[in-house]
Image 1: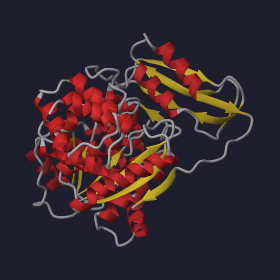
Image 2 (image 1 turned 45 degrees about the horizontal axis):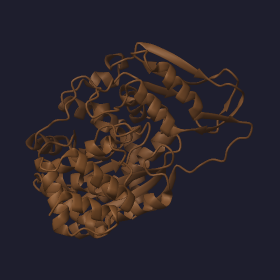
Image 3 (image 1 turned 30 degrees about the horizontal axis):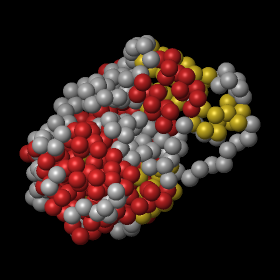
Image 4 (image 1 turned 180 degrees about the horizontal axis):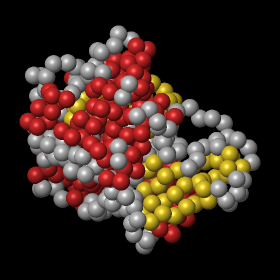
Amino acid sequence: MRTVDLIQRKRDGEELAPEEIEFLVAGYTSGEIPDYQMSAFLMAVFFSGMSDREVSRLTDCMLRTGDTVDLSSIPGVKVDKHSTGGVGDKTSLIVAPLAAAAGVVVPMMSGRALGHTGGTLDKLESIPGFRTNLSAEEFRNQLAEHGLCFIGQTERLAPADGRLYSLRDVTATVESIPLIASSIMSKKLAEGVDALVLDIKVGNGAFIKKQVDARRLAEMMRSIGRPRDKKVQALITDMSQPLGYAVGNALEVMEASQTLQNAGPTDLTRLSIELAARMIYLGKKAGSLDEARRIAEQRLVDGSGYQKFKQVVAAQGGNPQALDKFELLPNATGMREVTSPRGGYVSVIDAEDIGQASNMIGAGRDKKEDAIDPAVGIILEVKVGEKVDAGSVLCRLYYTREDRVEEAAEMVEDAFRISAQKPDERELILEVVG
């Protein structure tokens, strides 16, 4: 069979046979199919979609390109959490320690920055010394000892997805629901989880703009998990403004640390508790969701979640003191304030514009080979619904290079809308699926 014929058939909306999908995945992983042809196939999928049968086969093929981790020797239900990506979304740094402090075994395979959204691995690696490139043996050992480990995708765990993930980031195909579903599930199945809690973001700052599409993604991932005896539960959550106040890698580590010390933003704390509760419930550490929620809140208030995070940071080579002494984290050298042009109520904070502006000053990548500056980012001073005076500070940009600061500041100014009327309050958790 020829790659160009499969591209054409998918472009025209046809369903590919299992062996044809296997041919594409194997060929791209081995290097026989070049980037330019796989880019064309990804774009064809973006426009034409995939059937559930195609998505299931794509997931299986990506899973079989590498190894899987056997965690059966570690007692307990293994539960992971995954977000589809948002601006200021640092919940993994909070949720995983809370669930682990409650006794859940949490294997966390995380990703890097994608498009205008941040990556958990990039945030963790802003902690001096922190390692995410652990071997399978190190991964298992740390889970057995601490009940929590953060790792990145290795060359041996779903390597096809690793290559496709990078390609999607630079070919404007990130938002494809079938590609998101197969990417997430191939990684989660490879790492040996029993259950998965999903945070599917929807809104202007998310890859998924419509709630109906978010629901479709949740149902697709549940359908992938069901025949493999994996429990999948999803929250569909609002990403029409950044989550919390901090956007940028080290800045988000600081805010996550504050949240684990029960001094974080209301929206971030609430969502983290809700996600952790579902992990605790699926991990069979509570008999009901209400009980799981109480346990999550207790682990936050008594500081055990925070201590678990510090313990895991130390275990993975990081400096846990950086979670108390923020001067030990990378810090920016410059700061630029963005002020309100008029008095009124903040009616909109366009999360995507904030994420793109943060990337402009170095917090994300434009190309695969770009390096991330862990020190830079944006701190919001207000949230939607708050009243502001003319000239009051809306946010602050923190940077280390000045070449794109003006451009980023203009984009941030455009992200804020000030209105005479207070806007209606928008729900943070829009829907639960599963």
